[in-house]
Length: 393
Image 1 (cartoon, rainbow, N blue to C red):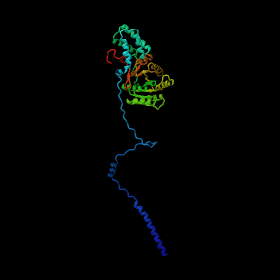
Image 2 (cartoon, one colour; image 1 turned 90 degrees about the horizontal axis):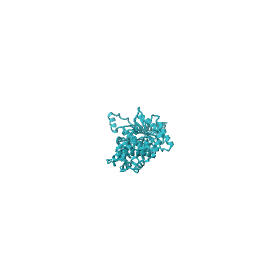
Image 3 (cartoon, rainbow, N blue to C red; image 1 turned 180 degrees about the vertical axis):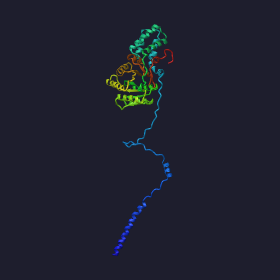
């Protein structure tokens, strides 16, 4: 019995020793509580850490970090004033001067003005695209005045010819651009024309003309069939600080034009300039669509100007273009481009005689400010040149 008691005590001692061995190490590994932090310690850590750094925002849909794009300040250009531009650009009419200046004045300066000479004068004017009817009127009046006045000197003949050409251009026509806002509503200028006339580029140059004359401008890129046209127009606008309203490719042009006018009203600009898609005058569906643009825009107010862009190098074909566009959208003025590259400057006379539409702007080069307000007297003076009269050109 005593042996069993001793054995039990031994087993109990072993169990107690094992339990103590398991518990004590765990008590030793328990971490000590941290010491209280002082204000000095806290400030030191903040100094070492530096200012807080904000992580870039992430796209919630993809989780991709999106860095904000850099803000680039585009330099806004100040266009050249339009006053006197035509005078400064007169040398660009050198090709047309060969017909009007050297040709006509040379014929008129002959010792004897017989029927053959007058026929040559008529041929020169017709070649310059003045038109048959207008040419006959000009020559008949010039012959009569020359006979009555007995004019013989080169200077006198030049003055008579200049007067007849200016008269044919009808200086009484209103050539001002109606671009001033009325009752808080911006003026709306619709720009139309056929493919290939340089319409979008000219539209951008018109924007520069308006800005140069003190107007604030908003552009509407209603040529939605060519994404490049909208991009090009936006580039022109950005150069002079003008906003461009555009839509997705192949969007409804009338909708874009409507949005542009609405945006112009909201922002309080002076003029909304709407570029439309190039049209072929013999495509009935496309012309109908242009009429739709006009009707939709007019829901917000009248269209103050409809400018037709004509390429001077197309000659008499430009008259047919002008006639059809006038029937659809009531063209109020013509912008005649590429006059520097043609000997057919007489198309100005033909357009006005046939249609009664004033030429309001003329393009005399590829430069961004080579678009000038049209003045009949200055234009004729530039066409005739001054070589025949001995004056400095």
